[in-house]
Length: 229
Image (tube, rainbow, N blue to C red; front, side, top):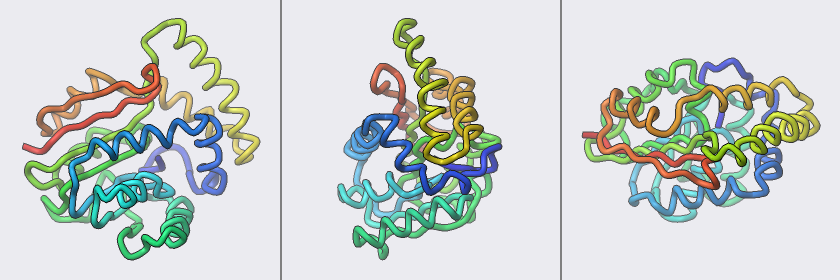
């Protein structure tokens, strides 16, 4: 969940990022990743775009849904934390963290059996270009999995969600990372990003087949899947 040429420098908040995620979501973010990985088809070689601190990459390895994961990001600070976590859990030989832009992936066409991206695509300066690049490096028949924040449809839940996100999460984030502006950006990025049926249309336009989505926890998070024709 990190910076791919976005307006936010994730290096500034890297040290407190995992703590912020788990605390403000009450640990539900771990369940979202676990469910996404559980629904994956086993894959030999996986690209995790906007890998951040490596939570999704490590979950795929733990659940034996990937044999090898390449994680790319533009935040060295976030990836260094990911490397430390991978070493601590004994996965250093099976996951690599590489500096690269999601908008210009440095890999040949059809290089990966699966491509994943957890809570990162809304930070891309050009999400459609990021989707096209993911489609390019995915082998025919390969699977795409995207997790991203979204907005609850229920007005009552939406009211309290907005209040919590805009007030509580921003304040907690600023206390943990000493960067209040970063979490104001998070709120605005979620509020204005595409989701649901609109995201499915963007996936089709990028060349993906059979795009689907599943809402999680009242629509706070959305799980997208698609395949390459």
